[in-house]
Length: 393
Image 1: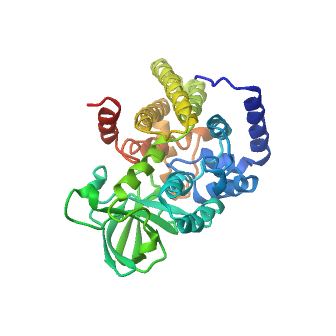
Image 2: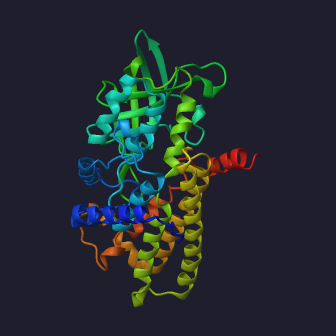
Image 3: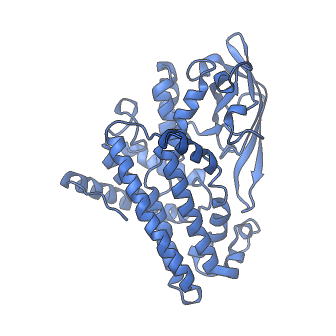
């Protein structure tokens, strides 16, 4: 693992963050975070931690100061993310704070900024993302959900799928078709929609791990004010691409992988789960985590110059996903048949898991990680971006 060289001021900042986390991150929050098997922490857990951070003014370190950000340097932001990850703090739900907010900074009107940004910080608004559709996941330009203009409103019809936490969300940001002729990308607009609007239905999708994380959202003649459009009409594709850089870019990916590696080491230290072949492959993953750490350090240098994440976020997305999948596979292989009773389906049946607590989530994490090379931009799409933008092919 590559360590950043910190100045005395940055070491003092790191110590301040550690002191704050130790004083405010309760054992209950740590325990619930450790039990998380899905992409995001449970809503109540994440929102409790966000409220604690918001009170300190640390809920949105990457935001501009004028909107409630901290004014931290890119290195300070990285330190903060790394310390929270090391301590086992729940990740804040990124859909609003990390993904939509930068888009509102860039494309939002002053009225939209005043309406939405403060409520993201307080947690009053809880967002979900309406991008993928049946048959239009990786190929977003082929989406079918339509928004037809009717005076000062759009009438939206269609459906979105794999919508994470739509069962909790009170708002959704959506890509919709507003023009059918010409290049597909040229007819897409970006709408902000209140989930309480008449005509919206949310249907759960239960994963093979037994989790209710994703949903299908249906729009049946849903009326949305034109003032809820972000950016110009028919130019939502540029808005969508800008947002995806922040979805795929993330901080402390190497640290999260290192925490997963330490969890595997704890398991291999138990005699009945020790395995020489798994230990060898574990060492290979450790080398890759060091390489990921170098990539993160390079990205920090880019951000320090004021640049956005850029196509490097696609490289990091694919690499970190590969590492996460391999770690979860090694952990499940070490458990062998002992992993079967720990499936989260037992929790749904109110049956108690047996064995070391740190093994209870192994199956759920493994199954959820199978989808990580698809959600947030599929592996193949990321490779196309890398080939075109990075390699110039």
